[in-house]
Image (cartoon, rainbow, N blue to C red):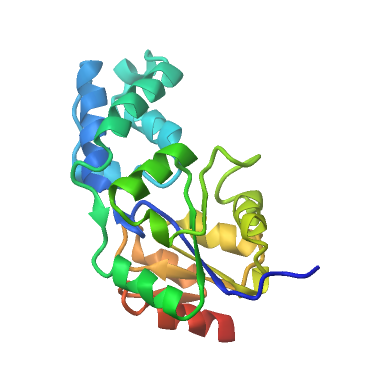
Length: 226
């Protein structure tokens, strides 16, 4: 099979590209208040994100104990999404160095993609509102494919959108799902985003670790040469 010759860097969204915790936490508190459930802190929510909105809502309701177990998960998910879509960029911003890193990748001839468990339309809206959508050659949310991270088909689907060579594709993320999807899709390797929300021990399972976004382009090239 003939692939595109450009290398591809695939970003996770929350906790890697964008510091989205403030708006996710505010949306979580709105949800809990709307059901008269105990509130949650930013740190509570930080430990719950990374597997998509529905799983986040499931964890929020579980956090509330018996009272949360009586609430319909789908209804709560819909309520969360309706609020979050309107407030997803109130306080969320690209992490420091994100724009410079993407500019550098483009200068070096890399294509840039997004692999997020968020719904694609919501992810695209956030990129547009933060004025960074023009960097992306492909955006693949968890709703586009048969399954989502850490399942291989999510990253494979994004590579197919770009006709990308797995041997020239690098995944960067702060969650174990990002590291696992890279392994499952058999790409060149993965980079653990040490500035993100995930625990440091995840870095031990990644190909390499980047401490800042500014060093990411060089780290990604080192992954390709390993």
